[in-house]
Image (tube, rainbow, N blue to C red; front, side):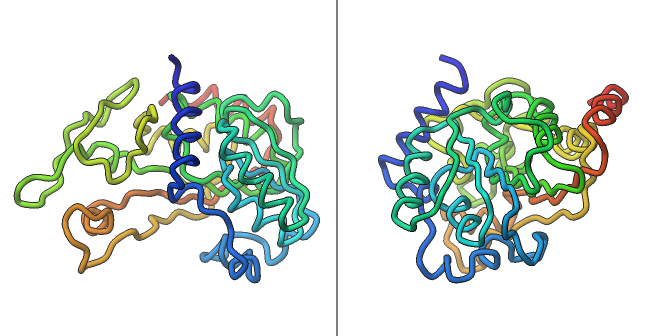
Length: 265
């Protein structure tokens, strides 16, 4: 069974289980959609009429907030269960979405320079190679288009267990290739999913190679000093779990392809 089949099944199960990833946008959040989506001020002040791709972002949250803010929204996700949440919430709120079941590393159904914004929540850990993902993002973005993405940090995926002294042990090689092994500490791992570790040079360098210019970088805080050992917020005091990146397309796809030939991971 390949990674796409396994990950599709894993996320369908998360929907059935009512996991946090299937939490849909609330009425309160829809009153201030851009503020909820963008606490750092990386998005334009208005997305009215803009073409937005919510990439690997099914689940009835990002799509609903963008559409509520006036954007024309396309959602690509591998999981029909996650897409069903987008469809349900759009019908409830009388919003129009374009929903496509596909993998983030193959967007052949989408045209060149079609989107003003690509919003990509944590999901690149589910594909073995980031180069096709970033190349596709660069291809479908318009010139001056924004790519807002979040990724699991490599060190977070290297953690395998918590010791008896409540220390977090790194047991996966930084240069590990192929699917990640099962681990004892599952704080930032999804049950049933096939995940892959991507290094900083593959994430940041890969975006640059695709012709995307990085404008901002952040490590979202998922920590609380009073959290007890075993809580994901306890681990967050020692290891930042995510990388959040704002990038922009400033050149044509043809130039992107030429620049990617000059970059060696």
